[in-house]
Length: 199
Image (cartoon, rainbow, N blue to C red; front, side, top):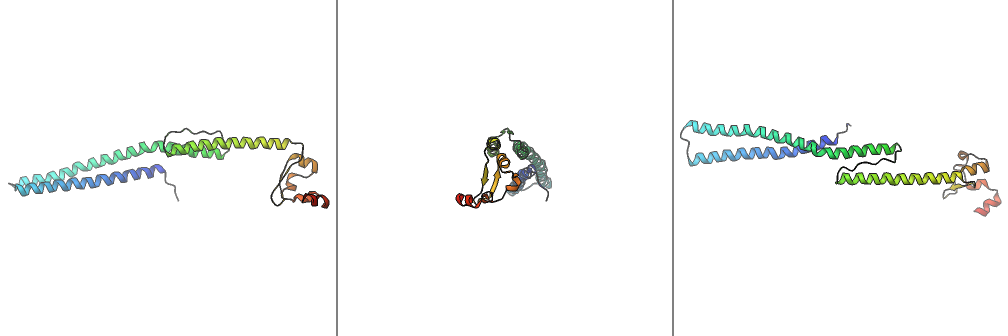
């Protein structure tokens, strides 16, 4: 299914609303003019056919004048919708670009906040999220550096006593590679007597 760009949806909505205003207005004006002409003719009956013809031509000319007016309103509505959509589109494109950069690992991204509406709030939240994620990533890298630099062996086990991770000191001391011990039971590395004590 093809994606519809949000600007096209926004323009269509704006044009529909403009049409809903212009079309009824045109019919209302024409109907009122025809009613006024009919009332005038009932109060002052036309003296000749030219008088009646002039009234009919006036009604037709009014419709001819209202059609361009309606067209101008629709064009104006289109231009206004593009103008109002521009700020929203800048924010949305920035958020899309920022999320792609963040997905690629760039946590230093900061987006400019171009509006004070909901999109501006989302952009601020995105910037705060990127900053918090960057801090957490740096903290994890520091901890990983500390763990890898430790001279004491370290292993991380889950609730079922299965090894989830080990540090380089563990692999040096016990002679196993990290891949060999991942998922193994903690008790596999002790004799029966020591395994009973640990349990």
